[in-house]
Image (tube, rainbow, N blue to C red; front, side, top):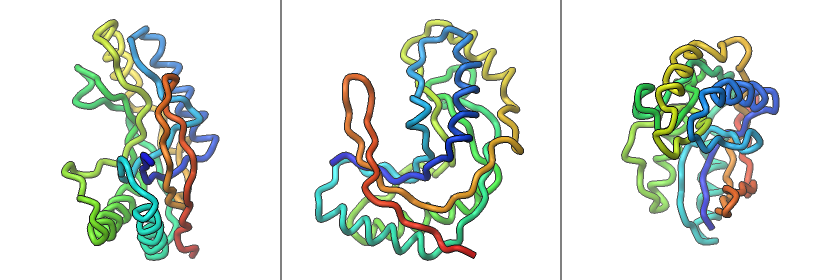
Length: 190
């Protein structure tokens, strides 16, 4: 199965991010927007795994979750990879809790290396993907919208508690991916 590990988002956060997507859609750029119900914060993309690996990953995920207390996270500015002037991936980054998230990901990478899953080459940057551009149509307008909305969604409005780490199965379809929860591992309560 195709799989990844992520932090799920509360509905009110998904709603806030959807409102932000709607503001960006005014640019009429050719963007494949992530379905608000599918929004999440990816910690590790695993690609194809078999049942034996799934079980080992589940054990590693429980171990990582049991090593960290639940923590508060906050979403910060809007941005794009590689940069707002040539957006390919539109995202919202994390400010509050970014250090804790980095620690969780580092431990997760270390645990997964032990079971033969290679470490991610790129440095982890906590973000939620809102959409991906499909063509250059109206990119200038999208860039202007990104710049004008840069300091939104606002730190106060989009904060949430990270309480679980989730292993997802991802099934690709012509209408977009379908995500299914395989396992949830709960962080320590304080």
